[in-house]
Image 1: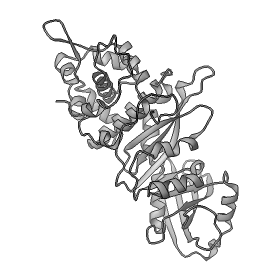
Image 2 (image 1 turned 135 degrees about the vertical axis):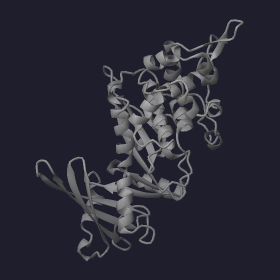
Image 3 (image 1 turned 30 degrees about the vertical axis):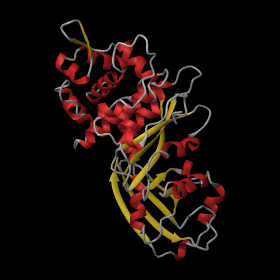
Image 4 (image 1 turned 90 degrees about the vertical axis):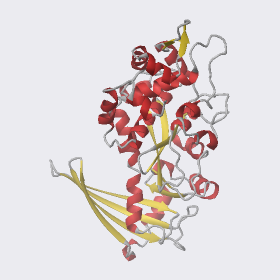
Length: 383
């Protein structure tokens, strides 16, 4: 059974060998075609490649993908593996209805795994969730997607959180297929769970750095009561961004024999953030804690500050980009696996453009659109 938990797909998740296949078209062939064997007119992989290519040019909806396919010339359709019709071998593009049907039924967990980046050997991996607000319909809540991204800004995978539950239940399922040996996994306060810490250290041989806030009342109280006045390990950092000046003071304590009750915990960091809005002069201060199994030799205060900031990568380089560049929250795709799979295609486009050296995703999409039936196909390796 697929590990995707929102809707059951009666197929197995892609293995590590499947994900390691270099060529995209061959990799997608390992994904099961969900359509009934009767009535198939367009190759499953061809439809997925059409969707990947169209989104790389900025397509935001099924209708936009269908329009891109209708206007594709014969040489582009041949590279995409589109079906032939008549004795003259004319290539026929899939219709918008076919594209919608395939993307609504394709296994979302499998597609996300196959189009994602392998995190093996990464320094950090950030986990966080986001709701596709436009997918809300009547009494049906918006699709909430839990994703993982490396510190370099490359999306690994995502998983839809089942309705009437939260991200905590999907954390282990999201990361289970991957080799995370030596990778430091970061997450916000919601995921500061004992089971998560045990899963990462004992099953995945990974590291963790979890934010601790007042939702963990007892643990937060233990950390606040530590002898912070005695610490000598400190790091100061200052940044200017988004109209504000922020100064961070990071203090670190080794907590052996200090009575902190959390699995495998070795160090705790106390971060004090001072913010000044440059336009209004308004000042604010925030104190939070981070608990980790990294030792003082593995993580100095400066490195812990860097690890903490890597958690922001998923907001700044994935969720923010999908919202502003692809208008994800305005998308009205609601049925089946459509919200999940369209989000996966957007993440794939972001990964592909970043791997090609584009630092501005909007500019990268424009560059693809200037030659929309050749450049995207070249970029994803279609001969």
